[in-house]
Amino acid sequence: IQSSPHPVIEFSWTQVHSEITPGKRAYHAASYVGSDQGVVIYGGWNGLTYLSDAWRFITENSTWVSLTMVGNNLAGASDVAMTSLGQRQFFLLGGEIKGFHWLNYAFVLEVNLTQNTITATPVVGQSNPTARADSAVASFGDGNILLFGGQFLNENIFSDTWMMQVGCFPGKFSISFNVTACKACPQGKFESNTNKGTLCNICPGNSTTSIV
Picture 1 (spheres, rainbow, N blue to C red):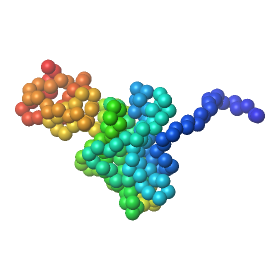
Picture 2 (cartoon, one colour; picture 1 turned 60 degrees about the vertical axis):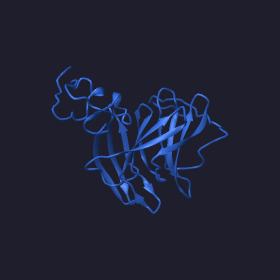
Picture 3 (spheres, helix red, strand yellow; picture 1 turned 45 degrees about the horizontal axis):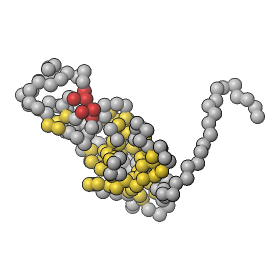
Picture 4 (tube, helix red, strand yellow; picture 1 turned 45 degrees about the vertical axis):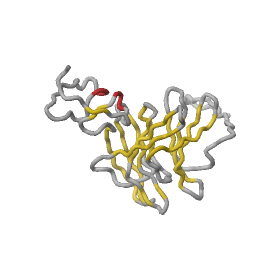
């Protein structure tokens, strides 16, 4: 074997066998839960059907657990973009559904590790990107999301860049950007921008943003 003049990383794969699995699929989304709590996958295509189920892979014992959807039932979709927000929450964008329809809606998924459930909360915004699949999204802290590219109808390939911050509606706030636990802002003075995790997203009327 001819040696390479460049550094290489040596590794080996280990196949994991589990009695229960999500079943065959492609074009699904996956993201790390955090704090060694496993990986979550969502959706995909099994060759016959667009899938709407979610599963968690527990790395400690190498087993799969089905997550029951609570609240909004998402349509089966493939080619969805997903990234972790921390706090066992994930941002989900776009995808393709039955009938070759492309999506432009977004959701925040929250996993309950104790009850093995997952809750989907719609993300409502303005000036949304056009419907697309196969895009790339990434979180870069404090609920900030970067979106780049994607495609529509397998023909139109996008090169646009979008940014947004997933947060509470105006007049509400959350700790560490837990977007499914928004609380009403108190009237009065609020902390400065040095502590974004406890700030109100646009403070209510007759309030200030001076340090308290």
